[in-house]
Each structure stands twice: as structure tokens, then as C-alpha cells.
Amino acid sequence: MKYTSFFSTIVKEQGQPHLSNDQFRRMMNIVHLESYIDALSFLQKKEGHRRYEMLIFKKHRKLVENTGNIEPKLLMEEMFRFSRI
Image: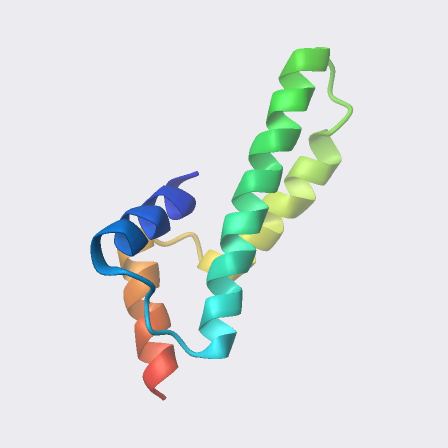
């Protein structure tokens, strides 16, 4: 949950980031997707079979769409840039 951890640190250190509504929704979607993937992965390991594999794959693909798979700091900088436009 690298994005969630990074966003959490930013909020703790600097307060709520000043993002546009679209970028704030994007940030919250990323947090949701990472949490959802983490929960599904936990269930998959606990149950010991691949029941959730396809759902995890789909959610991970959606996470990559939202993040571009770039580092969290670069993503946050991009979100700030898009908020100023």
C-alpha cells in the first residue's frame, strides 16, 4: 500500500492537500483500491486458494490506470499540477 502510506504521511505532516475535486477523488480512489486489493489478498492467503485472483487482477489494473504506476511522490506532484490547471 505504497500510495496510501505516502498520502497518509503527507496528510500527517502537511495537512489535507489542496487538490481539485477530480484529483481528490483520484487520491481517494487510489486509497480505496489499495485497501481493497490488500483485503482480497489477505482473504486469498487465509483461504489458501486462488478464488480472488481475477478480482485482484482487475482491481490492480484499475490501480495502475489511476497511478500510471509511477512513484507516489511523482504522482502527488502530478496531482498538484493537474489541480492548478
